[in-house]
Length: 64
Image 1 (cartoon, rainbow, N blue to C red):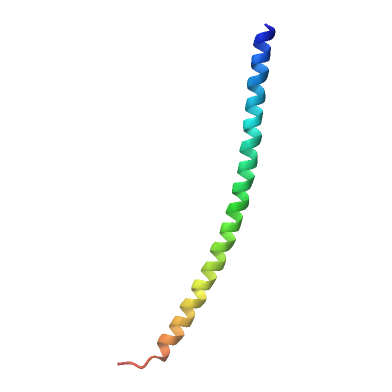
Image 2: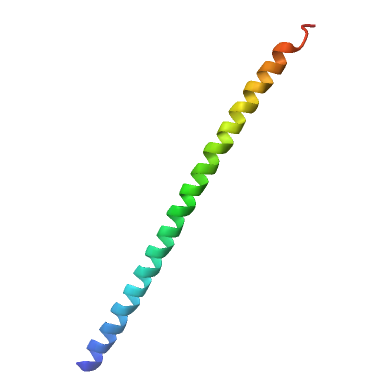
């Protein structure tokens, strides 16, 4: 019976270690997502500015 309890204790420790690892990975992924979303917003803003500038340049072109 002691052997069964020791085996169960070892399995519980493995599950807890896995859980801790997954929590850490989850937090890292959340941080990465937040950074990528910020970059996406900045790039979207740059695209919008470029589109506005392009439209202004196209309006200056002579009609032919």
